[in-house]
Length: 421
Image 1: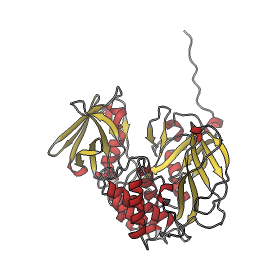
Image 2: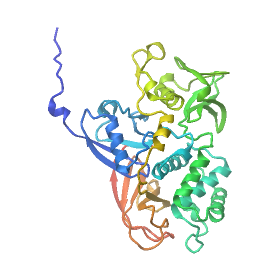
Image 3: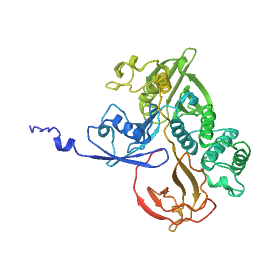
Image 4: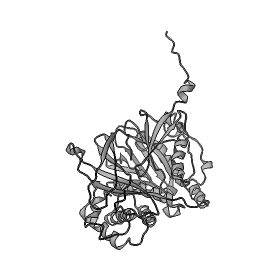
């Protein structure tokens, strides 16, 4: 019988640099090098230090595996052991725990980052809004990024230049323009962003990352775990809400998932062949449950799944819980950091090449909060444009022209990158 010879990793292999790119909430990218034994917390701290962010417990780093499934990077484990894709690694900095009351966020910088996340949620269809709420949210975005309505600078269809929602009708654009013109006057970017946060957190889909499932009659539904509790949707309609304080137990049985409340029980099954564990991610369920329900993180014990879920699975909570996050925010005494906002404008530019190469692109202009919020003028700015062409992403560099419908002279450089929203 032939014996296998196992080797421990050499010192040189452990010290080999691993290249990582973290895509930020404004689509800018932050590159860094880590060691093979570097834990996820180091990467999260690196991004938060880049922002000079103190209220960092709301955020996390997410990555996409080869099967297109999204995962949160575990801060307590080495990054390399969690990644299943080829190097260099591409990850995304995103909001992990949406605050129950955004007004309790202490610093403007934190509110701005949450605003960017909610804007992404609206754009990708995760933040579903009734017509009136969609119009108000859209007007807040326009006010935050363009500033005051100016008839001399803004053409009649200027709202059409913004891609705010997946299904953006002419009626909605006209209503957004009315609100921007008549109700947003005098609001600074920070005020407009806060107003968006205040409106968004009242919506049923605030902070929801939906998971497809079926109820026991076979009807398709979606599960979500939010700052308010456990929610179930059929189409765009919420059919169940169990607040975290009313949840007494979470239970998994094969493909079935049960949320047991004080007065009722809600159960659903996986929509496909995958197990319920793969469907809802019991780690994510418990993260949300513990974060919003517990009083102190020190009271949370490591959970072994042998008696609850699947044999051999362990779960450890890291970081503060929601109550501790608010208490820590109240103790912040520093001078508020300057907020460098990203102005974004979505336009359609005809490009040479096949028709499928014509895409909406996003111009990103970094500015400080003290600068004008208009893109008008002939002052050149360096900008990056992320353009989806098939499976590649193109970075465009050049100068920003006047905001009116001027042409763009751009230089395309195709670079392959990872996915993730």
